[in-house]
Length: 452
Image (cartoon, rainbow, N blue to C red; front, side, top):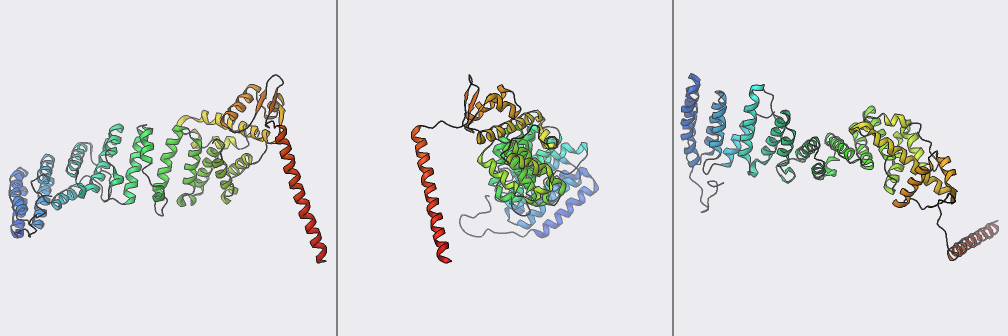
């Protein structure tokens, strides 16, 4: 700020106005103690003193005068005068940064709860005044790096006020203006909490594209640190809402597994069982892939799985290379979970559940049969022939299995036909392996005879 630096390198002259400051503040307080109508006179008295302190570089006295001025307005319950005084004092020419910080720090306690961002509770009549004061303080802190933390807290407060008034879109837009991840004055926790609030409001606004962008600002390593369990749970709970909208079962499985693996959840039997059940549910609803199979095998090794029959039985069904009967034994219990019905797409997940079972059964059939009649396979899998053909075609298209369907003869081939050269190469390889085993066995027999 101008007035706080000296280009010549010389120390600025400082005038000690502490005695006069004490006297003038007392005089101003006496004026309003007789009548609130004397507020203008008291503010004029302090305004003249404020200029002298500012020009005379008496910073301690300047801070006292500034704080006393807005305190007089607060004591007189004159909100218009309070806002006008804040604007005037903070916009004075060559105003000291510490004076502006002092004004904001004092006034912010009148609109925010101590040490937080939530606006203080007021009556219906006081809500308008509270909002005006928050807006005023945000305007004062705008563009000032030394007040970026206060601006972030005031923005969250204004967003909460707008949400309280039912203005969800405006609340979300207000919060999105602040790129808190670039702020150096905020702690990691405050940044995460701010971004989580942005996520919550964008999801509430149903702006899913922006919600995904905002979610990318969260550092997963930070929320995995000790002491950040609450933020981690909140983040992945919000992500379940996003991935439910996207109908992404595998990402939902990972979200619920992150929640399940949180230490605070592990201490509550009801919570970890529900999180594990949701993890298993969406894992079996996920498309077949190496990553999905890897996660399923890792969960199968979890000792807690033995305590939940629903999860243990379902995982075993999908890991075993055996045909699964539809519906499964534990399917009704899994479908009764709140996560299954969340978002109103339970019907979609039920269809996907059936589809994943059919796909599993087709992979099992492809493992044990080189060729089979379509009608026989449909009978084994308890499916309509048309549906079976549709699923096989879909899996072939996705590269999940190899299959060829001979409709006239009603034959499905799961093994690719080999040329004569390929067959001979396989025989040669098998013979070579056999001879190698015979040689090793002979060597071991001779070695055993020599040791006797």
